Length: 224
Image (tube, rainbow, N blue to C red; front, top):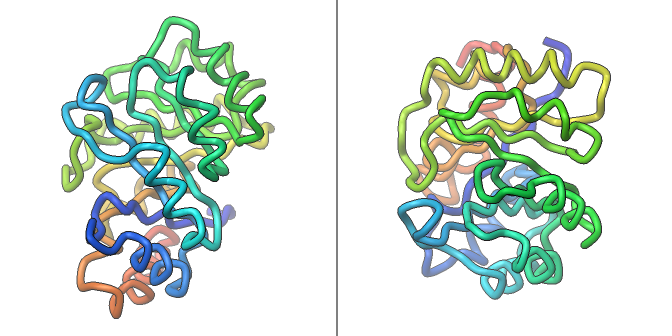
């Protein structure tokens, strides 16, 4: 495997009473991206963060703020998250009837545009959207909760999307169930952005650098 792998720690697994400190500690530990899971209790069965939280976190994020909108509708909130400091905004294919318009709006707000697809969604519609996508996020669990196990069939979906996007500067992200045991299979299939919650944040700040390095080594096939 020739491409580099970026580990994207999810602050959903962090200490909610100290998320700014968590973001700083993750950056110091080598995290280039911070993944922010935004859930609305409607599109997915949980409620997490909003634009104000992202704005509060932005000064503590030294790299890319990767905002994953698990909300519906999406379009009314794009500008707010962009103004809050998001570098990447990812919306779900399933969140509304006009996803092309959503992707255009994200880019129009000055952010990289991500498209997420749920486990039960096929990739047929993705091919018509490739010119407007910077990132494809494959949900390898059903969205809404952290700590779930990766759905094995999603590895082949990653492989199919890697083939579909060949020759284009589109990054493929996997979100859900990424651990030392599963990182290699999704990376070998073509994912180069691995979202990880407990696999990175377990053990507290003193363990973050070790956890990130171990996960990256596992993705690259290095014995850990």
